[in-house]
Image 1 (cartoon, rainbow, N blue to C red):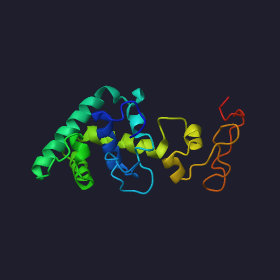
Image 2: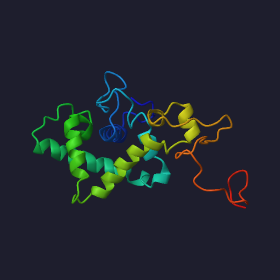
Image 3: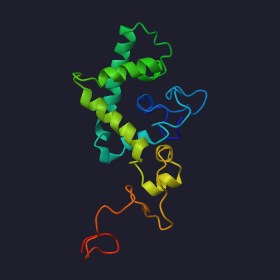
Image 4: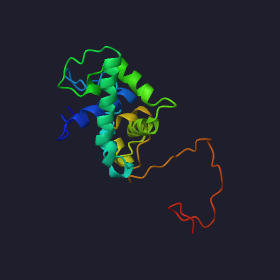
Length: 189
Protein backbone atom coordinates (compact mmCIF):
# COMPACT_ATOMS: atom_id res chain seq x y z
CA UNK A 1 0.00 0.00 0.00
CA UNK A 2 1.80 3.19 1.10
CA UNK A 3 4.85 1.90 2.88
CA UNK A 4 3.70 3.29 6.22
CA UNK A 5 3.84 0.92 9.20
CA UNK A 6 0.05 0.95 9.47
CA UNK A 7 -0.73 0.80 5.74
CA UNK A 8 -3.35 -1.88 6.31
CA UNK A 9 -5.10 -0.20 9.25
CA UNK A 10 -8.73 0.84 8.93
CA UNK A 11 -7.70 4.42 9.66
CA UNK A 12 -5.08 4.57 6.91
CA UNK A 13 -7.23 2.89 4.27
CA UNK A 14 -10.26 5.06 5.08
CA UNK A 15 -8.28 8.32 5.12
CA UNK A 16 -6.54 7.41 1.87
CA UNK A 17 -9.89 6.67 0.22
CA UNK A 18 -11.27 9.98 1.48
CA UNK A 19 -8.21 11.91 0.25
CA UNK A 20 -8.43 10.15 -3.12
CA UNK A 21 -12.09 11.13 -3.36
CA UNK A 22 -11.18 14.77 -2.79
CA UNK A 23 -8.27 14.83 -5.25
CA UNK A 24 -8.15 11.58 -7.25
CA UNK A 25 -4.89 9.97 -8.26
CA UNK A 26 -3.52 7.01 -10.14
CA UNK A 27 -3.61 3.55 -8.58
CA UNK A 28 -0.34 2.55 -6.95
CA UNK A 29 -0.68 -1.03 -8.14
CA UNK A 30 -3.26 -3.49 -9.49
CA UNK A 31 -4.50 -4.48 -6.02
CA UNK A 32 -4.90 -0.91 -4.74
CA UNK A 33 -8.51 -0.48 -3.59
CA UNK A 34 -8.17 2.70 -1.56
CA UNK A 35 -7.05 4.78 -4.54
CA UNK A 36 -9.75 4.42 -7.18
CA UNK A 37 -7.48 5.27 -10.10
CA UNK A 38 -9.65 8.04 -11.55
CA UNK A 39 -6.60 9.98 -12.73
CA UNK A 40 -3.44 9.14 -14.61
CA UNK A 41 -1.51 11.55 -12.41
CA UNK A 42 -0.71 11.59 -8.71
CA UNK A 43 -3.40 12.88 -6.37
CA UNK A 44 -3.78 13.77 -2.71
CA UNK A 45 -2.57 10.40 -1.41
CA UNK A 46 0.74 10.50 -3.27
CA UNK A 47 1.10 14.19 -2.40
CA UNK A 48 1.20 13.31 1.30
CA UNK A 49 -2.37 13.87 2.53
CA UNK A 50 -2.01 11.26 5.29
CA UNK A 51 1.24 12.76 6.50
CA UNK A 52 -0.36 16.20 6.65
CA UNK A 53 -3.53 14.91 8.35
CA UNK A 54 -1.37 13.24 10.99
CA UNK A 55 0.75 16.33 11.62
CA UNK A 56 -0.03 17.65 15.11
CA UNK A 57 -0.03 21.27 13.86
CA UNK A 58 -3.29 20.59 11.99
CA UNK A 59 -5.16 20.08 15.26
CA UNK A 60 -6.78 16.97 13.76
CA UNK A 61 -4.65 14.16 15.15
CA UNK A 62 -6.65 13.55 18.32
CA UNK A 63 -9.91 13.43 16.37
CA UNK A 64 -8.90 11.35 13.33
CA UNK A 65 -10.04 8.02 14.78
CA UNK A 66 -13.44 9.51 15.55
CA UNK A 67 -13.75 10.99 12.06
CA UNK A 68 -12.77 7.67 10.49
CA UNK A 69 -15.38 5.83 12.59
CA UNK A 70 -18.03 8.41 11.70
CA UNK A 71 -17.17 8.30 7.99
CA UNK A 72 -17.44 4.51 7.98
CA UNK A 73 -20.81 4.70 9.78
CA UNK A 74 -22.04 7.11 7.11
CA UNK A 75 -20.71 4.75 4.42
CA UNK A 76 -22.56 1.75 5.92
CA UNK A 77 -25.77 3.80 6.02
CA UNK A 78 -25.14 4.89 2.41
CA UNK A 79 -24.71 1.25 1.37
CA UNK A 80 -28.03 0.30 2.97
CA UNK A 81 -29.92 3.31 1.58
CA UNK A 82 -28.67 2.63 -1.95
CA UNK A 83 -28.98 -1.16 -1.84
CA UNK A 84 -25.26 -1.71 -2.34
CA UNK A 85 -23.80 -5.13 -1.66
CA UNK A 86 -21.01 -4.69 0.92
CA UNK A 87 -19.23 -7.55 -0.83
CA UNK A 88 -15.71 -7.58 0.54
CA UNK A 89 -16.08 -7.25 4.32
CA UNK A 90 -12.31 -7.07 4.84
CA UNK A 91 -12.36 -3.44 3.63
CA UNK A 92 -13.63 -0.50 5.69
CA UNK A 93 -17.10 0.59 4.55
CA UNK A 94 -15.97 3.85 2.93
CA UNK A 95 -13.18 2.06 1.04
CA UNK A 96 -15.52 -0.55 -0.40
CA UNK A 97 -17.91 2.07 -1.81
CA UNK A 98 -17.61 2.47 -5.57
CA UNK A 99 -15.98 5.80 -6.45
CA UNK A 100 -19.25 7.37 -7.61
CA UNK A 101 -20.80 6.55 -4.24
CA UNK A 102 -17.75 7.87 -2.37
CA UNK A 103 -18.15 11.19 -4.16
CA UNK A 104 -21.92 11.24 -3.57
CA UNK A 105 -21.41 10.62 0.15
CA UNK A 106 -18.69 13.28 0.47
CA UNK A 107 -20.91 15.71 -1.47
CA UNK A 108 -23.72 15.07 1.03
CA UNK A 109 -21.43 15.41 4.05
CA UNK A 110 -20.02 18.74 2.80
CA UNK A 111 -23.33 20.22 1.69
CA UNK A 112 -24.83 23.30 3.32
CA UNK A 113 -27.04 22.29 6.19
CA UNK A 114 -25.32 19.01 7.02
CA UNK A 115 -24.71 19.08 10.79
CA UNK A 116 -21.13 17.78 10.43
CA UNK A 117 -20.22 19.86 7.38
CA UNK A 118 -17.41 21.76 9.12
CA UNK A 119 -15.53 18.54 9.98
CA UNK A 120 -15.69 17.12 6.47
CA UNK A 121 -14.83 20.41 4.78
CA UNK A 122 -11.84 20.78 7.09
CA UNK A 123 -10.66 17.25 6.28
CA UNK A 124 -11.09 17.96 2.56
CA UNK A 125 -9.18 21.23 2.82
CA UNK A 126 -6.19 19.50 4.37
CA UNK A 127 -6.24 16.89 1.59
CA UNK A 128 -6.13 19.70 -0.98
CA UNK A 129 -3.45 21.51 1.01
CA UNK A 130 -1.17 18.47 0.85
CA UNK A 131 -1.33 18.65 -2.94
CA UNK A 132 -1.40 22.42 -3.43
CA UNK A 133 1.29 23.47 -1.00
CA UNK A 134 3.03 20.40 0.47
CA UNK A 135 2.34 21.95 3.87
CA UNK A 136 3.72 18.88 5.66
CA UNK A 137 7.27 19.40 4.41
CA UNK A 138 9.62 22.21 3.46
CA UNK A 139 9.06 23.63 0.00
CA UNK A 140 12.66 23.10 -1.18
CA UNK A 141 12.56 19.48 0.04
CA UNK A 142 9.19 18.90 -1.65
CA UNK A 143 10.45 20.33 -4.93
CA UNK A 144 13.65 18.26 -4.74
CA UNK A 145 11.56 15.13 -4.17
CA UNK A 146 9.33 15.92 -7.17
CA UNK A 147 6.19 16.65 -5.14
CA UNK A 148 3.31 16.01 -7.56
CA UNK A 149 1.24 19.10 -6.76
CA UNK A 150 4.10 21.59 -6.81
CA UNK A 151 5.43 19.96 -9.98
CA UNK A 152 2.02 20.12 -11.68
CA UNK A 153 1.72 23.80 -10.82
CA UNK A 154 5.22 24.51 -12.15
CA UNK A 155 6.42 25.84 -8.82
CA UNK A 156 9.86 27.38 -9.27
CA UNK A 157 12.83 25.56 -7.81
CA UNK A 158 14.91 27.35 -5.17
CA UNK A 159 18.19 29.00 -6.06
CA UNK A 160 21.46 27.17 -5.40
CA UNK A 161 21.51 28.52 -1.83
CA UNK A 162 18.12 26.93 -1.13
CA UNK A 163 16.19 30.22 -1.04
CA UNK A 164 13.12 30.81 -3.17
CA UNK A 165 13.38 34.00 -5.20
CA UNK A 166 11.38 35.41 -8.05
CA UNK A 167 13.62 37.01 -10.63
CA UNK A 168 10.73 38.72 -12.38
CA UNK A 169 7.84 40.45 -10.69
CA UNK A 170 4.39 39.22 -11.62
CA UNK A 171 3.52 42.62 -13.17
CA UNK A 172 6.90 42.93 -14.86
CA UNK A 173 8.01 45.73 -12.55
CA UNK A 174 8.51 46.41 -8.85
CA UNK A 175 5.24 47.41 -7.22
CA UNK A 176 6.88 49.71 -4.66
CA UNK A 177 10.26 51.23 -3.93
CA UNK A 178 12.25 49.59 -1.17
CA UNK A 179 12.44 51.54 2.05
CA UNK A 180 15.97 52.97 2.40
CA UNK A 181 16.48 51.15 5.71
CA UNK A 182 15.62 47.71 4.32
CA UNK A 183 18.40 45.22 5.08
CA UNK A 184 19.91 42.92 2.42
CA UNK A 185 17.72 40.09 3.75
CA UNK A 186 14.60 42.18 3.06
CA UNK A 187 13.83 42.99 6.70
CA UNK A 188 13.00 46.49 7.84
CA UNK A 189 15.68 48.09 9.94
